[in-house]
Image (cartoon, rainbow, N blue to C red; front, top):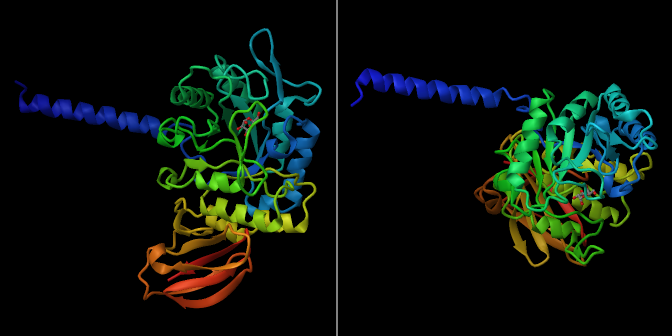
Length: 402
Ligand code: GLA
């Protein structure tokens, strides 16, 4: 039998050990990343494999000149196809034709504008576009990325055969941390292995919850090889239901990058897309050509009131709180106790939609100030509910402050 002294020593030992472990976790270089959902730009949705040093530099310039940087956009992310091979010692090689000055030069330029630099790779043997993947080179690549000044890594899931998703992403996070550089880890596993259940634990800062977005309002489209599917905006939205509790500061559900401005939806639909992504506390990664934006598109992407909802420091993801046929109400808790609310009309004609205070978590006798975030206008005080006509495929987005 142990004496009470022995018991005390054992308890102290366990306490020390666990404090040590906690301290170790808290001291990780990546502990303070993505405290609000990451904002930036990525090349894939508009340019696919057509990436180059010149295009990326001009996009970074445009991010500053257009006011996107001032609105909060920060990361300039090169997606698939920047890499062509590995050299004799296994180092990843960037396309020498498209990136003649190498990746560090691109990163340096992006940093010189006060922006951050992101790249893409894949947990398997090859990327989705068939370029060399990271498998077996995780630590080597992480050291290389750190030397280039990479701040953000999107890590895809093609060609992973029998790999375990959680273990694979834990491995790349450990490699990134071992490099000594704080690098955001964007898990791009498409939701297959439910990354919301383990993404935070393995140090992922965001995780895709679905397959790829498609620049369409609704529906799913099969890939050319017959496999399923790329998703219209509403198909993605529907797949977010019930995931809100998994998101929080530093670890976000990612319903995929924005299609705003890419031409497949109307401006009304893009306004809905942007509003819903903000309610979802989604990463706001623009995917259009920033050098060439119509004013309507610019005004959507830089709406600071909508962005503030997305970036709210409480870090709550919003949820669908009411649905009847084509009409829906989505709401998100805001740090000051107010709610951001989206009234969404999926139907083909204008209809009135009401947000009832009780569905938003308030008693109906409460009186609340309502502000319209697209009209940038205070609408006055409302009791019990707020109702408004909503255009076909449109939203009304408000904040309600009791
Ligand atoms: C997958 C990802 C996309 C994009 C492409 C690149 O489809 O989900 O977001 O990165 O690969 O090949």
